[in-house]
Amino acid sequence: MTEKIYPDSGVELNKFVAKNYDKIMNTMSFGLYRGFIKKAIKQMDIQPNNSILDLGCGTGRNASLMAIYLGENGHITGLDVSELMENQFLQKFKGQSNISFKKQRIDQPFDLQKQFDIVFISFVIHGFPHEIRSNVIQNALTHLKRGGIFYILDFAEFDMAKMPAFHRLIFKKIECKYAFDYIERDWKAILKEAGFGHFKEHFYLKNYVRLLKAVKTEK
Ligand SMILES: C[S@@+](CC[C@H](N)C(=O)[O-])C[C@H]1O[C@@H](n2cnc3c(N)ncnc32)[C@H](O)[C@@H]1O
Image 1 (cartoon, helix red, strand yellow):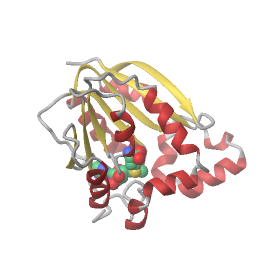
Image 2: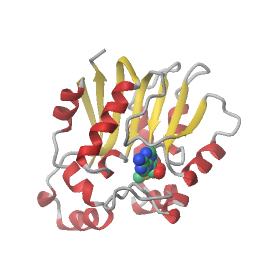
Image 3: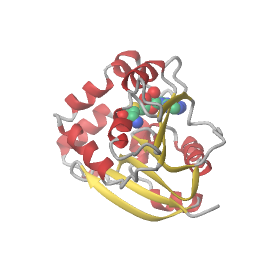
């Protein structure tokens, strides 16, 4: 990350975290991350010819798990701002022409002039100020075919005050300020307002994490 635009964001990663992101996630989750992410991606029900846009794709760890379900006509485009993430992503998919990377901010409106079957975002949207999240949602809408699916893999909605003290302590310690209001919002209502419907959700990691499926209902 060259510059940090949102002072309280935890998704604008520093160099050390960006370089070691996957290892850090494995360690911080006491090894649970690996199994959970595999399960979540399996539950996305990806079809062999799907086109997938991964917003804030990071190292490509999720893309490599999604690619398992794709055939030769399926493809993934990963977008990220970080050069360190870009390097890891490109290294991972060297010689795989159906998986590409583009350096692109997702917190501002953009148009790739292309629509996808699936737009996926994992552990990115919670890290923006709320007024910026609507840009991300709009970008997802712009880049989905009608009937296409927006998958948000991120924190679920929960009341921090009701968390066991130990969990609350960890959440407060590791998470950025923006995550605290993210968990309090009604995301199905927000997405419905934006033009999505037919919601479905799966929960993981003691129900603190959710895969939210939202279908684009607008043109
Ligand atoms: C917490 S990491 C998650 C990475 C990946 N989605 C995953 O689940 O492994 C957040 C990612 O968002 C990227 N990011 C942060 N701000 C961004 C922005 N404005 N536009 C695009 N990517 C951004 C970071 O570089 C980082 O790769």
